[in-house]
Length: 117
Image 1 (tube, helix red, strand yellow):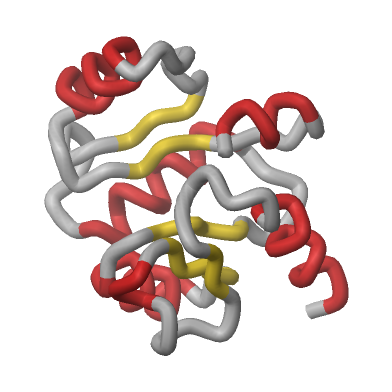
Image 2 (spheres, helix red, strand yellow):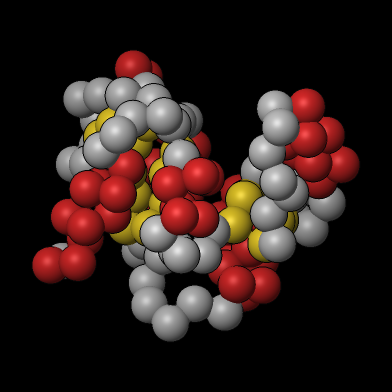
């Protein structure tokens, strides 16, 4: 997913309920670059506040699209009024936009679906 976003020159950030150092370590272990924009429980306790911290660091020009694989992701994005793409089997029937996993070739298509909303 990150490779597709980078190739398409789409800025992205990571918002995680875990610790920032753990997120960076996991990304390094997976061979992924550490994103420029990352917010974690180091920044706030509430999920929506972590997400807002990440967005503030990014300074976007438009409404964000959030990809998540947990029900808390869907709840937090609804609370913030953000657009959401559910990822994985737990969210398959619970979100308007859904992809199978973070390697799904439809990731950019999912982003495009929001260009008309």
